[in-house]
Image 1 (cartoon, one colour):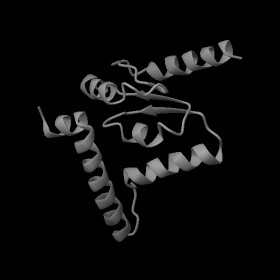
Image 2 (cartoon, rainbow, N blue to C red):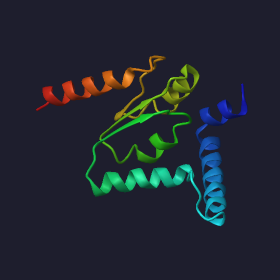
Image 3 (cartoon, rainbow, N blue to C red):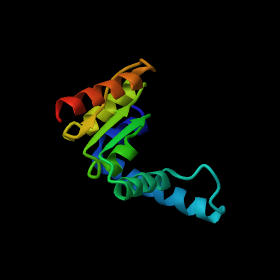
Image 4 (tube, helix red, strand yellow):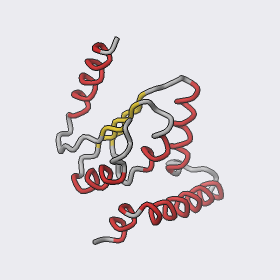
Amino acid sequence: MSIMTAVSENPVLWLLHRMKVKSIDYIAWRLKGRPLPCPHIIKEKTVQQYAKDYNLEFLVETGTFMGDMVCSTKGIFKNIISIELDPKLAEIAQKKFKNASNLTLPVTRNKHVLSHVWIDQNANKTKNT
């Protein structure tokens, strides 16, 4: 088992790793004059602010990776769809967020899944109105 797999599967280790990496990345980014690309914590805060400013209910994310965006927004959005093409990362995310009722983590190697997600969400929206 790799270190990142062990960290991602242990909630305490994952939280400590997340806090340490996020803090170091943010401080280094500020000291360098805020170059692009920005650290992930800035992306998370931007998505959170957009959700608030525009009353957004849905988030579709491509590239779940370690689940940082899902973790930082799961209490904000009514529904989150996070698509990960790597089966191992998708499996880790499914275990990590198994209790999140507002989260869909499709497991697929199909790069065209976004069009299906869009159609499915619009169909569900139509059924519920």
